Length: 186
Image (cartoon, rainbow, N blue to C red; front, side):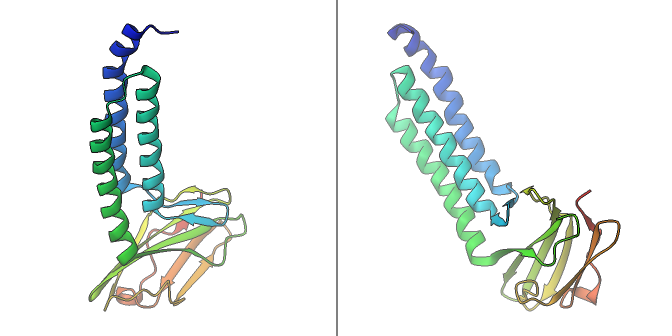
């Protein structure tokens, strides 16, 4: 059991660390990858929001445990973090879609595509994830004209090789080239 004096001394260090963690998560969360859990795809802004809420709950919990929650500081931190999450979410919701492509590979490997379209341009990235899911690190990229979203429209060919690698051909991509590098869960 801590004495009131020990709790008051612990708050500045623990509280500052929790607040710094919340702000760090709010900033770095803008770069979070999509996460696949089973057959569900959590877009980066959802992962971002979950991490920020967790960090803010930790900051409040530490404040309550030490007996000195600094309400104005927590409110300010919460508003800053909420603003960053809202900016990330609005950009993602307005311009970006995420799709798990079919078919899956023989070993359960799946390909995830991120497409963004704004005005007359579009870009996309793809990555592979194993049967159990996890974060998807995008490795292949392509660009399209006229704000097209060919993956969302089903205008692609995904072929799996015997070695477990996949080749993706997107008809509206510049030069109708296959996406490089080949995608693989290995």
